[in-house]
Structure formats: structure tokens, C-alpha cells
Length: 226
Image 1 (cartoon, one colour):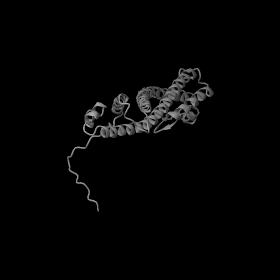
Image 2 (image 1 turned 90 degrees about the vertical axis):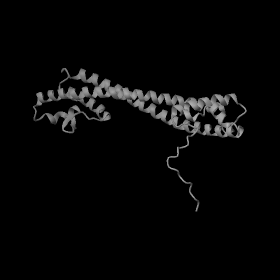
Image 3 (image 1 turned 120 degrees about the vertical axis):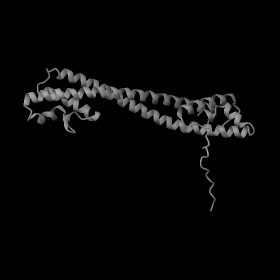
Image 4 (image 1 turned 90 degrees about the horizontal axis):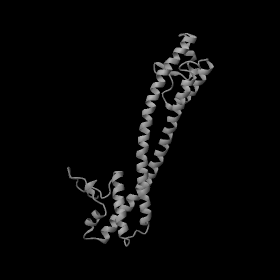
């Protein structure tokens, strides 16, 4: 039976030469790339320095793109929140129109014509944005078929609401799609960059057996900074 090494409590964890944070990985990758360009005699047979440069560029672009999409998504969520609050209040007015026309006792029978459903203990448009999007179209149909087009909260009002909602919905979907693409690109390039950096570390250790620690720092592998 192989004896397991003794684990000393409180012993500091050895820091890797390669950072885990994406921003730091970009910084170290760029530094190593520049240094590699100054030492064309150091080669890896499975990848060129040009390919490594491209990998870092793609990773950085995806990193920046993902950050940008997070900002867009946050902005859209905020705008959705405000618009949905307005919609919820406006549905109350439409319910008043329905009560006025059909009476309080029969009003709920007509709600589905306007896309209004029971949400918890009240009647509203669905909370889910995908379902609410469809319900807004139903609201316009209900407004028209029940001859409420000329009301303050009639056809013109709900057409504008639907247009604004569709714009935010589309913007949200685009941001999610682009964000997903950036995440995929980052994951692929992250693996490649770390693989190259590990290989370069081994290459430096092999070529500078006595001074490789100094060389590592020159190439940007300064683990005390990340």
C-alpha cells in the first residue's frame, strides 16, 4: 500500500504560474506572446506563435464582448422592469373598462379575451415575458373586438406598449445569444492559452535550468500579482 504524503494544516497553497482569472490570463498571455516574439529560436512543434497570438486576441474579444453583453442585459432587465410595472397598472384600467361594460360579476369571464389570466390572487397578464409577449397581442384583439379602441388605454396605447415590449424582447434575445457565443469562444480559447502557457513554462525551464525563475518573470509569469 502506497503511503500517502502527510498534509500539514495551515500550509499555504502553492500558487500556480498561470492565473485563473480571465483578465489576468489575458495580461499574462499577451506578455508571454511578446516575449516569445523576441525569442524565435524557442519553438513548440504543435503550435506557432502566430496561432497563439490569434488565440489570445479571440479570447480577449470574447471577454470584452461578454462583459458588454452583461451590461446590455442589465440595462434591458431594468427597462423591462419599468415597462412591466406600467403594464400591470394599465391592465387595471382595462379591467375597469370591462367591469363598466359587462358588470363586476361577469367581468372575469371576458378577461381571457384580453390575455388576462389569474396570477396569484389577482388577474393580470402573465409574468413570464415570453407569455406576456403573446398576451399583449391578445390584449389588442380584445380591445378591438370589445370596441374599446378609442379609450385612453385603447388601441393606440396598447400598440405603443406592444412595440416597446417587442423591442426589449428582441434586444434581450440578441444579448443572450451573443453572450452564449462569447462564452463558447472563451472556453475554447482559454483551454488553448493555458495549454500553450504550460508548454512555454516547461520550455523555459528546459532552456534556462539555472535562471528559469527570472525568465518566467520576464515573460510575465509573476504569480505574486494574481
